[in-house]
Length: 145
Image 1: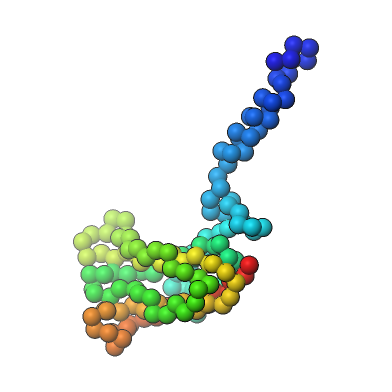
Image 2 (image 1 turned 120 degrees about the vertical axis):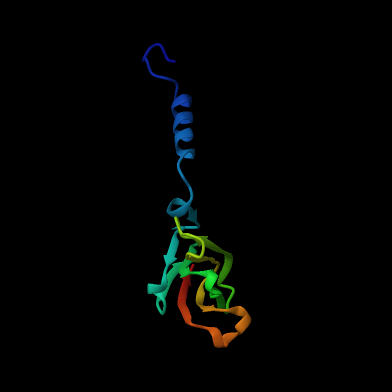
């Protein structure tokens, strides 16, 4: 400490600032990729048929209600490009749902590079083939750099 002024040395002040800045969260909307803020876009049944503008690096999550005990499950019907890649598919049972209760299927995609991509999903019984499709979900992603 500098006795003449009663202030801590500059290196202590700078070190403290760096420590505080490094503690800031860098995920979700706070993370940066290049020059834009990376974000997560969540879509539901109500978004079927829409065109969604997004940027490379963004995470795209499609959440669709499902009850697999009926045999019907959401699956990818069409994903026809490299601009958006599938990262994960998971089923989450609804909180408090009893045996045989429903939940939701989550498809997580990552926007990779600029382009236009159509993602189509289908609710079906895989063992019965396309004749069993009871619902479709479709969204067009316009990915920009």
